[in-house]
Length: 560
Image 1: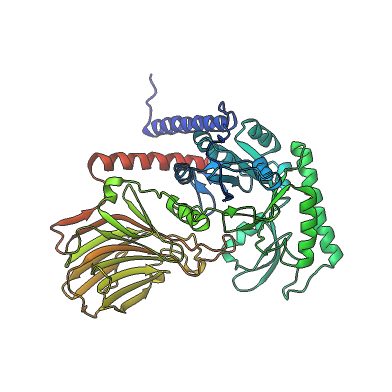
Image 2: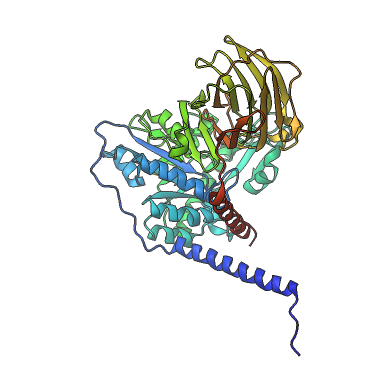
């Protein structure tokens, strides 16, 4: 008698088959990452600098398929690289930098030195194919203590040797260890010394008060050194000795490039005597040292042992990266536009704008704003607007309605630093009609808002005569007060940088991306659509299928 197959057995078979396909796909990606058949082609000496403009140095924390607040997604990383290549950037090597400083070698007009920090295995996998596609060479930075442990998250000495054979990679070092000293939490409680694993566990509870292992004396809660000068010196020298041993045993040589973590001290440590010890060992062991972060440009005025790099963050749009580089280099930049048809409906007044699928990403000027105007909207008066704002919580995203040409009269709804503001401007005099702390939405952890903290918030604005209705995530925040500005006027979208955009990890970011998704503008009775950037029909179906498939693959990557 034939055995009846139950539905749950069929589901198990289907699920198992699907899992098997995903596993095979991931194995294939791994093999492709470490067994490349292509070869890096150096830049051609046809477009070299006629006057010294140096080189741009970028250092990514890591690349992963899914991404998080530190590692950038493969998709976003490729967007960055594509934008750089379209602007004429070519990668240079460690030897190019040495020859530039020591032998006067000329560099390509737009030179890029690319690094990846922390030695994540996933970075080699997910960044590798992008590097091959765009013919890039980069330096993989690792920690010496990770070479001797069997942690699948980090590259092994065998992996590093294989990467070098692939020709797209060089090796550098972040030092021997990533650990922290003199750590305090948000409540100013002294935690002392933390390993990188301990640091990750309590990161959400930390303040900006901490330091890297080599940057200072180990101190008590009162700031008093817990070690003598000789003990400090022996501790730091021992770390460099361990670094040397780990690389000699792992890959048979010590990398010539070193990155000193959490420097930016205008020396090699937060204390002069600590700095002196670091400086002596760095210059003894390495050929070059990146000592600063936050700015991207290095030129002949820089010291070979005091180089700087910029660390693009996982949330940066390609235009955010280009804006930061433009600010550093003052060279012309071609910003990413995206959907050209959609872009023709707007006038960019400030900053740069990218139109991608159902999103409008407005990148501000440094320490300023980004502003675009919807063309042919000057006759708008009584309208309803629906949009999802998705930029970082720290910063500003604003919507102007009934705005005149000179922005002397308008109604504005703004989300800035987690505060909702309803603003009216009459004859150049701006007044806040209502402000609300958006902590009441309870959609994010407001006790730990970081530069990278995002929140998607559905916003509905309706203007009818002298009344305004504002709803955020279903909560009505409409003011009781009536409006004075009832004349017709244009619709504008704005992004505004956070003036206090400081973090321990990324010292200062004075550029902001405002994100406006699924924007629909209609008459106040919703009978007439005035503007709509949502996908419709087959485009919408295809987009949703692609996102669903991507989410499924991401789930398996994360959970297998």
